[in-house]
Image (cartoon, rainbow, N blue to C red):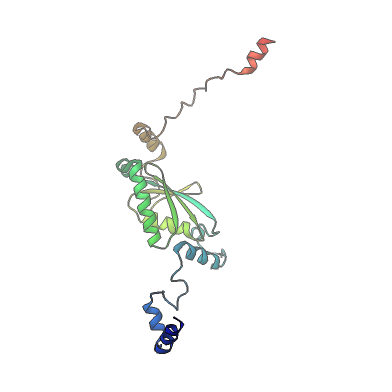
Length: 200
């Protein structure tokens, strides 16, 4: 069998190494990142980015998530859309949005936390700003929240439905428990301390 290998090696002449390799479909030889998995590639790019420096005259919003650590933000859909979708539809929309962002090069985990509310979790420099940009391109968005501050799509300065109205509507739909009246006191608990004192 060694003779056959020797004959095969002697009888085969290589004319164009690159073309032979391309025909083997092993990827682009000139691009060492072509065959890397998406998440590995994102991590590699994140590590290669220089630290972000704030300079006078810079828009502070452009530095959102510049640290590159884990960042969380929320989106609240327009109330009508939230009612239409419910929790199950919001789950599906979260999955669709995650796919759309990945196709655009933004790696974010998206979770439906309530009907019409989604949580975005990113890890990488500048990704929070890209999530904001994406969210404001979606017609379903009422507002986006980051670090306990609400942001609105271009052309608006407030939510379409304020928080109090939204809470009342969600209570009627059974999505949230009614708030306890402010003047009511919580029921007193019967403590064991009283019994022990009486026993002595």
